[in-house]
Every structure is written in C-alpha cells, then in structure tokens.
Image (cartoon, rainbow, N blue to C red):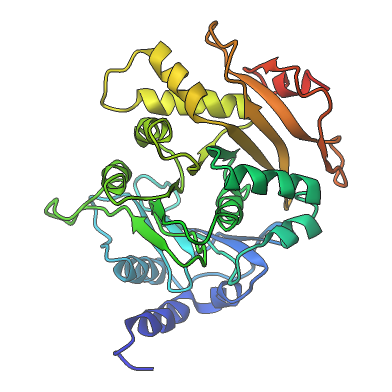
Length: 357
C-alpha cells in the first residue's frame, strides 16, 4: 500500500480509527453501525438490532474518525455544518451529526451495503418477491413505466431501486442522481451524478435539483433519482411527463396512497408557483406504479405493488389499483396477485389499498 492509491490509504486509516468496531465494518451481515457517542454503540444485522459491547477509545478518537471519513468525501468537520453526509472506501453511506444538534455528542451512522448487489433471485429466495411479481415488474420496467419505490427508513428502497434498474435494456443511457452515490448498476452506459456541498467559502456546491436540470441536457434514456426529498420532485414529475418515461425514484411513505401525497407535498416545496390542482394532475399523469416496501423485525418485504388510476381523480383523491398484496401479516406471508383489478380504491389511508380484497 502506497500513497499512490489514496482510497487504500483512507481505508487503512479508517479501519485503524474504528478500533474494535472494525469487525462490524468487515462483516457482510451487518447492515448498519450506529455510534451514539463513544460509549453507546448499536449494530443492525441478520439477528436484528443489538447493543455492542465495544466502545470507542475516547471522544477525541470519535471526532478523529469523523474528520477522516469526511476528508475522504472531500468535506470538512467544522462548527458550521452540524449534519453531514459522506461515504466510505467500501461504498458505505455515512451520516454525521455533531453537538449541539446531537445531545449525545458527535453521532455517526454507517449504512453498509452488500459487496455484490442483490439480484431478482435473491429477492425470490428470501420471500420478498415471487416469480410472478418479478415478471410483472420486469415487464413494467421494459415498458418504460414510471415507478416510485416507497417505504420507511431502512426498508431497502435503494436496494430494490437497484434491482429494478438492472432490469433495464443494457443499451440505454442511464443517468443516476444521488445525494451520496449508492447505486451500483453494473450496466455498460451509466452516468452517476452526486450532489456536493459548497466549500467553506460557498464555492463548488451543486444540488439534486441542479443535477436534474443538467441531466435533461445530457440525452438520457432513463433518469434515476436516488430519493426525492424536496423540490426536485416537481422537476422529476415534469420530466416524466415530457419524454423521459421509464424513470425511477424513491420516497419516504407508509403506503402507496401516502406516497402520492408525499410527492405532492415535495412538489409544492419547489420555488415555482404551481396550482395544487395542476400538481395533482401532473402526478397522476406521470407516476404509473408504486412499489411499497416495509421492514418488520430484521426482514424486508415488498408489501404492495399498485398502479395509479389515471381517471376518476377529479375530487382530488389519488386512486390506486393494487396488483400484488401481501397475503396476510404472518412472517411466511407471500406476495399474491390481486383478483378483480378493475375495482380501484380511493387513496388516503393505510387501509385504502386493501378495500379491493
């Protein structure tokens, strides 16, 4: 190892600074390392979440780890930025919150990803999807349907987004836009864009919205936005309605109905005066499918696949047509195709998509 390969240098230094926590860093079964100060550490893995018996050497050691992680991502730990995102040499995603925003002191959450991305076969083997559901989703992706993956934190939205993206035609030009690059598509023509914070003098930053607008001038066949968090949702919806069909993104929501409502709220956060009725009409026209994911204990499941009904929305309510639903709430429940798909239920509650069964 030499200084000619800075990634190896940073990886070695981060491993040293992690101290006893390096065993989790190297463990493919650990999905998250949560450091709530030097003496309060949790890990999440195959057996669920548990408190670690390990500790960081000191507060100074924890702060040193944070500095090196941020340096690797081209950022700095300063008193002015209390919340920062970064990534590690092994492609893990890191979020750092420091005091006084964090009452426990400096807090680091490390989200780790598989070295080999999950495949369709993996999702079938774990029971997250059935072969019938996989075939349906592949047909929707190849048919250039606009899809949103909805779910809570840690439910596997980005993982599923990657699986869906790898179903795309390998001859297409795909542009991904993320806050912190996570997607590893393994396709031949992928342009990965990543938002950047400005430096201490306000120079060099670029937002998700800026990247999205630039993307539309880069002749993409597909646009994948890692997560809609703000006004970029409006740009994405307008792009879906103007020749960029087959786009994918994720949103934080508890069910397909709330996913549409959440997207509506995000669109209204844009610095553009658009009437609510126009936003709703564009959303209904743009989004074709919502794939809902959830997590119970340590198991991640696809709980619903619902189509957005394109007519009968004049009352302002989003209507969903469920195609697949989990058959029951037990751990061994499977994703089953719904009969009577012509009966659409009005959206608006967690029970709305179940009114058809």
